[in-house]
Length: 109
Image 1: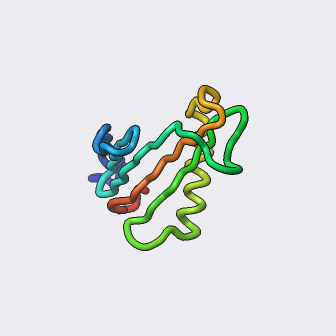
Image 2: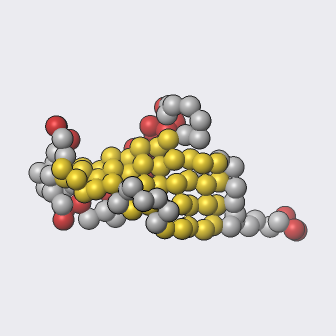
């Protein structure tokens, strides 16, 4: 910014872009963009079932290549953050999956 001041990159969000997930949104900040798809609640399979709430899974997909250690770390942080706002107690013994696809990363992921 002029004069050495700090300014935030422009932020925008658009909902309902994808038809297959139960919910979707695109998040853009500057030249960084992430597409999110939410699936569920659905019947949970195997040992992931939680008797008192929905099991939340977060999958972070990089722009190119396979997820690595950084993506796994971010997935854990995002899951913990989302668990604080998702009303999982309304849907015990179910699963909710949040899939995040990085479309472009200009430093705001």
